[in-house]
Length: 68
Image (cartoon, rainbow, N blue to C red; front, side):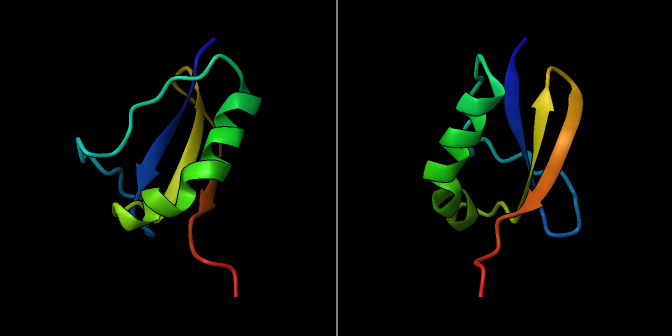
């Protein structure tokens, strides 16, 4: 199984920006750890939400907004 992140606007529109990374991860934990390290860079690149995918199945979505 491969895990990956889908990058989206705040409204959930999928971003097709080639500058956003297309990383594949061997486990959910690896994908989540990577996001924890890179979420600010992703946000600066235009992603406002992300969805974790297991193969093509959406597992969950979350905002990349700064917590207040």
